[in-house]
View 1 (cartoon, one colour):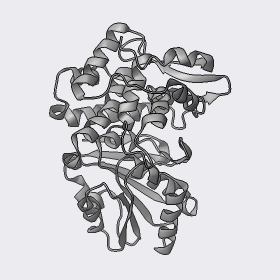
View 2: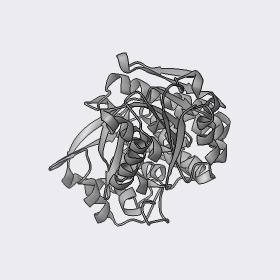
View 3: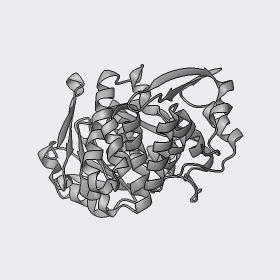
Length: 344
């Protein structure tokens, strides 16, 4: 399967095929240039090695697993390693891993020598359904997620479904929350795939349809001036929950990103019957539908969100399946939205 992101001279293909990681050389030039392969300690080493084996002049650089690697410190270490590898403007960075590696690698590529070629090879459900395309790259500053970054489109994205087979179940399900999100805002048939039962049986279609939704949105609004904001559905509250209860830094117990997004979507679904259906889907997947969390702390983080402007914040609401609306609301109304402990 293939999709093409239509962005003029920044257009690129999204290849979705089992085993395609071993054929990266068919989609981008890996010879006559240095290839810097970025991965993390949680990604099975054979994936980066599979890319390295195709490169006459390549190296693998491994950062620690987890959100903590999206930091200024690790960003600096990666840039120094690229410089030590004597990389020039004609060289290539390949990210092999999940959303953290895609975000970090993309930002390193965007800023090294003011921009070098970048290829994304997502190996988690979360990155395959969402973060691997669209060109948003970023690192965190302290507790504030994705606040330092750049728009930098990859040259090609390789989605190898085989890489999902090594994912622990919870990681696998974590990424599906973003696919449910895509179905809720834009694709009733995608949502229906989750209501039918085992997502594993339809995973290729789920990933394809999710990426198609995101591709269509990005083509119309590459730099999030308007419509692309719909992809933030569930994220305003979700990022707040993640800041308080997320697994990050030294915090090893808590919630994953997709789990936080799932919780963040529920208060934003205005149709009660649809909210009930969404809760049933999350339960069937093993995603949380409620959590005990300090609402005041969540509120404080939400007010620092990139979408917040002083006394107001933009939130995405879903009035019915397959449609969405952006509301700019006073931040004073946020506490009423934080009904995340009640189960309707």
